[in-house]
Length: 574
Image 1 (cartoon, rainbow, N blue to C red):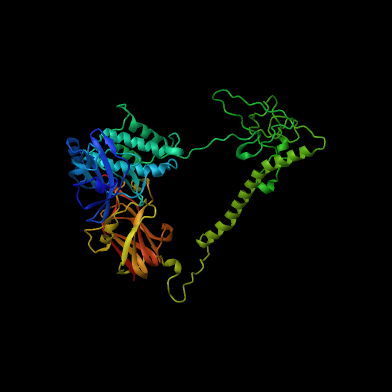
Image 2: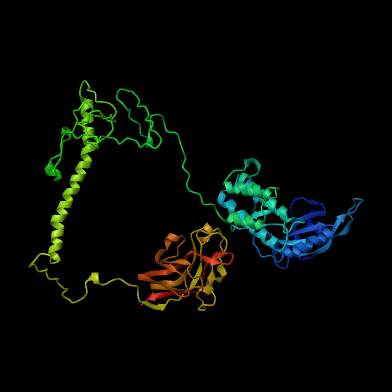
C-alpha cells in the first residue's frame, strides 16, 4: 500500500516512500506512520496521520506545535502539523475511496539503530546505559518543563544515532502523561539492564541503576520518582565506590601468599591456641640467644655474654622476668625455647636438626646486631671524617686559612649562578586554523562552531565548553577537552596568553610539531589557571606547529560547570 493512494489532501511537497509498521490503534482513532521525501528541502521526513480528525486530533496538533518549539537533540524535531484529508475505501468495499478528515504531524527523520535492535544481543554496558538514558531523560525533562507529556517512549521509537547521540521518533505521541513518561523511562532502563529477545536475562547491574529502574516504575507515592529531571540528575552522577576485595579460600596447608605452612612442631603435635582474658596483652616472644657473644671491639661498647645470664627460678615458661626482661637464655640451658619458644630442644640422632636450629638462631639474632654495628661504625666515620673536613672549611680550626676560590678566566658567571627563567616573548604567531580536541568525548559537539571566536582579536567573544553537571571534573565523564591551534608552520614558541572570564579554571598548554590524535601526542609545555589575563610562559623555547589549550578543570556556572576562553595569543620566541 503506497501513501499516494491513501493520503489525498496532504501537502504535495511530501512524496511517500514507505509505510512504517502496521496501523496504530488508539482510543481516539488510528495513526499511520510513513517515511516520505520533502520535495522542497530534499530531505527525508516522518509523517504520521491521525484518522479521523476531531477534538482528539486537535489536541494532538496543539501538543505537536508545542513540541516544535523545543530545541533538544533527544527528541525528533517537529517540522509541521495541520489538518487535511485522506482517502479510505468505501463501506461497500469498492475501489472508490471516500475522503475523510485527518490530522498529520511531520517529524525529523532519524537514522540509526533502534534500541530494540541494539538490545537483542544482550544488555548494554553500564557506561552506555547511563549515557543513553541520561540524554533521553534530559530531552523528556525539557518537554515537561513546558508542560508537554511526550509519550511513545518505546524500544522501537528510541534510536541510537551514528554520532553517539540518542533520539526519539514520533514526537509527540497521540496521547501521554508525565507520570507515564517516568514509568516508560523506568521500563527502558530495565530493558537496557536485562536485554530483550533471546539474549534477555534477569535485570542486574549496578545497584543504583537497578534501584532507579524500580523507583521509576513504582506506584507507591513515597517510592516513585518525583520528575524525569531527577532521573537525569541521578544518571549523570556516577556513584563513587572503592575497590572491593574478593575473598577466596586458601588451599589446605597454605598461608598468606600461597606459601605452604611449616609444621608447628617436629613431633607432629599441633600447638593449641592461646586464649587470653579480655583486656590482656599477648606475651612478648623471647629474644633468640646468641651462641657466641660478639666482640666488644666490634660494637664499641661493653657487652655481656648471653651464656652468663640464667633464668630466674620460678619464672613462667616463655614469660619475661624482672631481672631478665628480654628473656635471654643460655643456648645450652635445657629450658631454652626451640624454634617457636614452646618446647625444650630435643637432640636428634644425627645432630642435623640441632645444627639447623643453631644456624636459624644465629641468623635471627645476629643479623639485627650486625646492622647495629654497621650503623655505629658509619656514625663514627662520619663524625671523624666528614665533620672534621667541614669544620676546617668553615674556619673552625684556629690558624687555618680557607682555600682561595678560583674565578673563571673569562670573567663570566658560572653556570650555577645563571638561574633559568621564562623565554623572552616575541611577536604573536598567526593562527591559521583551530578545532575542538575531544579524544575522550562521546561524539557530542563541544560548541565547535564558536572556536574561531577564541582568536578573532575580540575579547568580547570566545569559545566555551558544554555545561557539565555533578562535578567540575567534567561531570566525572572525561579528563578534559581543549582546542588545537594550527600555526601553519613549525616555529620557536615562548608561551601562550589567555583571556578568560572563567577565573580559577585549570589549563595545560601542550605542543606538537605534527597533528596528533591522542593527548599523549602533545607534550606539556606549561600549566596554570585561567583569569582575565593569564600568561603561560615556557621555561625554554619550544619548537612546534600545533598548540593545544587543554582544559582540565571547570568552574561553577548557573546549572553546572564550564569554562570559557575569550582570546588566545601564541607568542613566538624573541
